[in-house]
Every structure is written in C-alpha cells, then in structure tokens.
Length: 484
Image 1 (cartoon, rainbow, N blue to C red):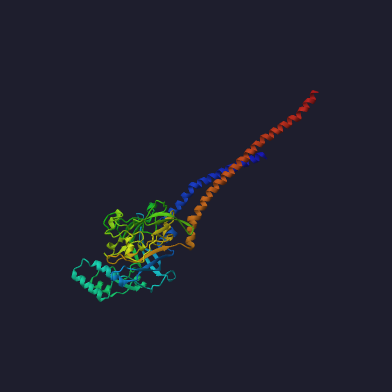
Image 2: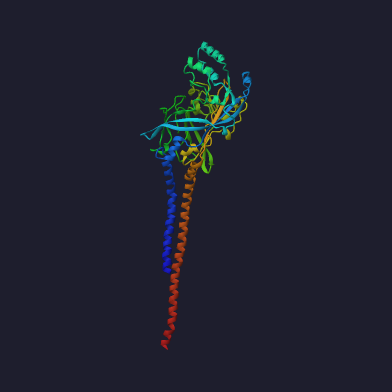
C-alpha cells in the first residue's frame, strides 16, 4: 500500500509542476494573445465585421450640443457699452455619420469621404429650434473686414446695399434659421453681383455647410503594414500639407482624422489629429485615469498652449497674425472672414478677453476640451469619448465677441457595450486571475505531494526496521534453548 501512495505522490508532483508551469507560461503568453487580438481587430479590414462596421458607420449614439451666446444689449453696444451675453441651450442634435466612396489602395491606405447629418432631439435640449436668438451679424461684420481693400466707391455702394436690405451689426433669428440657413436678399444680391464673395450660394446659416456634407477626401493608413500607423492621415483632399499658415510646421497634417488612434497607448502618448473645421492639426496630452461604465480609460486634454499666440508659445507664431492668447485666427481658411476659434467662454485664454464681454464664466469641467479613450484598444475611441471639440466662433470689430460653442459626444450602450466590456475588461481579468490560480494551485499541489511522498518514504524504512527487530527478538530464545 505504501508503494502505491509513493507512486500517487510522484504523479501529483508532476501534475503540480506542470500546472504551475502552465500558469507561468500564461503570464508571458496571455498578454501576447490579447495584443494579437487587438491588432487583428484594429486593422481596417472588411473581414473584421465588428470593428470595420463601427469604423464605417459609427452605429452608436452620437450627439452635437450647441450653445448660443444671446446678446442682451445690442442697442447699448452700438453706443459704446460693454457687450452682455447670456448662454442659451443646449440645442442637441443626433449626429449620423457614414463613410462612402471607400477605396483600398495597395500601399496599405484607404480613402473615403465621411458624410454627416443632424437631427434635432427636443427631449435632450433646453429650448426649441423656434427660440429667437440675437447674435452678431456674420454677413455684415465679415463683409466689412473683407471689403477694406476694395476701392472707396465700391465700399460706399456695398454699405448702401446693407442699409437697403436693412442688415445691421446684429441678427435676430430662430435657432433653426441660424443653424441651417435662412433666405437673405442680401445673400442673393451679393451672389449675383459679387460671385465668389460668400462661401454659400443658397441659404445662409452657421451650420448649413455641416448638414448633408462631408469633411473632405481622407486617405488614412489601414495598419496592415504597421499597426503603429493605423488611422493616421496620409493625405486630405490629395494634400500632404496645408497652405493656410506661415510655417511648414503649422501646415503639417499630423495624426489621425480625430476619431480613432493606434492602440497600446501609454501616459506619455499624445493624441494628434487633423481637424478640417479648425483648418489645422491639434494635439491632446494625457491628464489622468478614469472609468466609464466599468471600462478603464485615459483622459487626454488640450494643453494650454493649443491656442496660445506666438508671443506666449513660439511654435504658434506660424498661426499668426495673432490676437490675445486663447484665440486661433482661422480667417485664412474662412474666405478671409474675421473668424476666431477658442475654448468656450475663453477658457485657458488671456484673462483680458473676459473683460471685453459680460456673462462669461469659464470652468475646466464644463469648457475644457478632453477625450476619454481606452489605452489598449484605442480604436474604440469614438464610442468612449465623453466630450470633444468645443468651438465658439467669434467676431465683432475690435471687440472679440463670442457667438456660439458646441460639443460633440458619443457613448456606447446595449449589446455593443456588453461586447466591449467583455473583451476589454472581463476576458483580460479572467486570463490574469487564471494564470495566478494555475500557479498557486500547481505550487500547492506540488508541496502537498512532496510532503506526502516524504512521509511515505520515511514510513517505509521505519516499518522495515520494526519488522526486523521483532524477528530477531523472537528467534533469540530458541537459540538459547538449543544451547541448554
């Protein structure tokens, strides 16, 4: 029976060692397997049904929230008083994106145009599209600047035209008209007698060019040749660099198209992207860890230097002519119209800008630009981000006056959330726990089996010794009897 226990112990020792070794192998192989799956599902490939569909059509809720700065004292402003504004909104629109004209190229790139449509969501909005808002008149103020170099007689003619059509420095329209366009006799007149002066030939609206439009022809890397390049822009509208700005660095098209990034991010990783709306490349930096619906995230924010002027941050000199820090002059890509972009409420801008206008209250929580993204499977970014690009457009004579700002955000829910949570959280956690369970179980089995084996081996010699001693003791009297 002792021999049987010894063999069983040896068997358990072998099993324990193999189990521990399997757990140790998992420690090294597990992350490699997970990373391999991430790479496989990140490559832009029609064969990857889930990831390709999400890249192509973004089948998750995606919204744009618009806030207007309603002017409370337009008449007083014309008399020299400080502008006073009141934020109205949000007016929320569900955003629908789809990529069309998708063409794959032999050099591991793919071209596409992304079309976008917007649908008003009354239940999510504070107000309705019928709300009446007063803002600076972009047509009049923009034309006033663009006409500065024209002959004096022509400027008088156009000024008289403004008065004829009763167009003043401020415009009062409904939200729907301001957003998607309104009929303007002035626009019709200018398009007829000064063709090409305005960007639009139909209705004039701040977001008219957004709806049912595309963001240009993007050509990006698929990641098939190098996963580190996936989603990075190769060209935009056939261009590998811009011509809006004064230096080669400022004209560079860097990073991705702003929806997805290469996987395996670290805290040192930055998020560069090209924004056609900002007419330049932007870059976000890591701030802190976060969690959304059980999924761990990295939060990336806009650095204070993003819209700094050339005086405060020398590399931005190429984006000048500059005003105060916090304003980006985009007139060079907006038909020379006096338009600036910044963070909402002049957040992270020169404090003097807040002295120009009453009613602005910037806070990082509400007005800072940030993106939340899963660091390993960062290709899931557009479905995890909490807030994105917030942009007010500003103009009025020598006073920089805010008109509006907007944010875009999306979130995952339902079956897609379940799939991501399983793949990004549960499976890696199970694999991590299993490898340590195998190691612990293998070591425990080995230790117990060794102890049992040792006891069995010690007991066998003791039993044999006791048996020999007893036999000798029993035979000795017999020998003595024979002597007698």
